[in-house]
Image 1 (cartoon, rainbow, N blue to C red):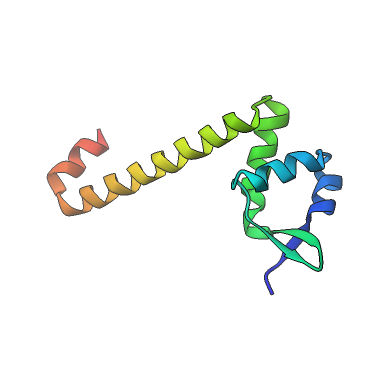
Image 2: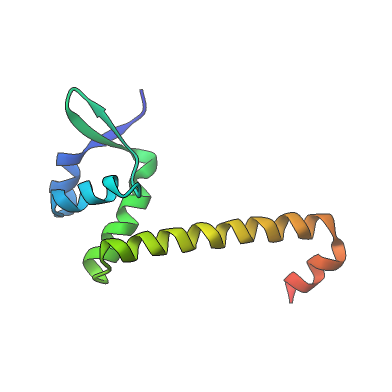
Length: 99
């Protein structure tokens, strides 16, 4: 069994609204497990949750903004992977990436 933390514990520890957690889950930004009617967040998803909570509560980014930021970060990571792949194929291309 994977290590996990319940939604209720997260709400208490991070002092957030349960509706915020539910909104992240409903929008697909968080992946949860349900066991005996209790929702759990896997520990591996905790950094993602913390990032969203910080952006929402500290920077006042709303849910649509979090969704956009998440998608843009995924695209940036995909482009980085593509750059790594291309630079591995061509030493000449890699020289330009180092500049």
